[in-house]
Amino acid sequence: MAIRQLSETLINQIAAGEVIERPASAAKELIENALDAGATRIEIATSGGGKALLRVSDNGSGMDAADLELAVRRHCTSKLSDTLEDIRTLGFRGEALPSIGSVARLSIASRRRDSAGGHEIAVIAGKIAHIRPAAANPGTIVEVRDLFFATPARLKFLKTEKAEAGAITEIVKRMAIAFPAVRFVLSGSDRTTLEFAATGDDHLARMAQVLGKEFRDNAIALDAVREEISLTGFAGVPTFNRGNAAHQYAFVNGRPVQDKLILSAIRGAYAETIPSGRHPVAVLSITLDPALVDVNVHPAKSDVRFRDPGLVRGLIVGAVREALARDGSRAATTGASDMLRSFRPGFQPYTQRPQTPWSAETSPSRPYQPATGFSERPQASFDGLSIPTARAEPQFSPQPAAADTTARYPLGAARAQIHANYIVAQTEDGLVIVDQHAAHERLVFEAMRKALHSKRLASQVLLIPEIIDIPEEDCDRLMQHAAELSELGLSIERFGPGAIAVRETPAMLGEVDAHGLIRQLADEIAEWDTASGLSAKLEYVAATMACHGSVRSGRRLRPEEMNALLREMEVTPGSGQCNHGRPTYIELKLSDIERLFGRS
Image 1 (cartoon, rainbow, N blue to C red):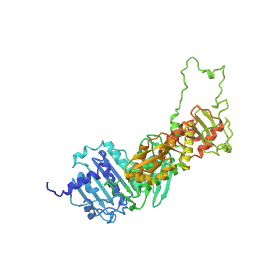
Image 2 (spheres, rainbow, N blue to C red):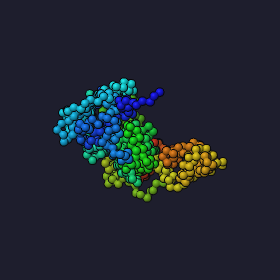
Image 3 (cartoon, rainbow, N blue to C red):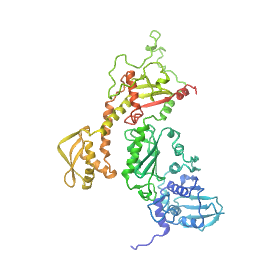
């Protein structure tokens, strides 16, 4: 079969299969062009989920007739020099407009700010029409109609109009977070209008527009630098989480990306702090020399490849964990909102005892005695942790304490224990309800984790070393981390060119599948060049032990025990959530309480 040169239209249609996967892909490319042109106002209009109409208007620098003619031809761009090592714009491949024009009806009207008039060009299924003069405001209007009409098979793979419209909304949200100084308006016959007003340099205000006002109150600022890479942004407190990872946004040199390494690092940073099936809310911005990152991995430009992925991952995990240790123990403000919503005005008393309005405990012959929630018998001392008792504790009283007493402590002073599981404490401006089991579980776990990292873990010597056959390159990687693994109680030696001998395993793990553990470590080191898998496994065991070694639900606590628990929570990182990620306490402000009674 003879080899022949493909036509320009067919080449563009092939490229469109990679660059323009769906209407949202076209929207992303057109918005990027507007941002690269210096636009401060971008308006996006859609119809039929972007399949029938996609229009992007901007007030950027605009194009003249010569620029318009080149813009719709392949590999023509103003954003790239002679090298791919210094890319500082969102677009650079010169494929978007010709790819769109090959599968849709494309028209572009543009005018430079210093020009008296504008020009317009059209491309229909790859055929370029002649440029003609057109009335236009400074900037550019790109209109795409009947997307994929020239390739009907592609239409069959698109989702519903609602789903496609939602995908475009997500693209606009990501761009809006990355560029807070730009005003974005998204409208159309298939949606309600969505507007993000420009917030200038106030990135958190823009994030609040996109992620909701609650994010501002539950976000922790990030600002870290490691070698030549800097990380800024905001991470939500662990108890402020969502049911999916759609609220995690990552940017590299201002470019919105959906990179697996970054998303994996976010998951790792929140390990042991969020319940299974829940996901943190975070916005991360990574800035580094363009030469240290390859953004040309895929035509969609949503994946990147770092020259030193281990450094980037370590920076993210370290920065987020440091922020959580510093400020992540506070409860999410949404906890109080959920509590307020659980109250119902006009509550009717339980009336399923028709024989008498009095219960046995409150009958006239037996006056009601308010329960304090404390056992009358002396209880065993507070166990599980060695908590200093030299610090003066607030004197317990069933009556409200003076404000100057509660003001000394963020979590206040214990006032009661209800249902033998929940501690009610009074703070200076409200009250706190603590789940005693969840809180103590976290304290025990943190104490055990601290012990893990402060000394070599105890190991158990195998009577017969286990010999594990793995590829030679994996043996080399493991032996490079042999000293680190030894600190965790795992002693390994080289046993020939393609085998590892395991002589000791961590005693904490008990009976362990050495073969599975070694292979898992080898795979992880190959991917991230770290040996954190064993450490994570040990922390999981520590979390399980902490759960079984904590003060149980149903145990009565004395006032001094409750106060000791509160004081320890205040100085323990991550005490705002248990090892499974559930909140350990909920704070209710006095203003919230007054609102319940209609006093505010």
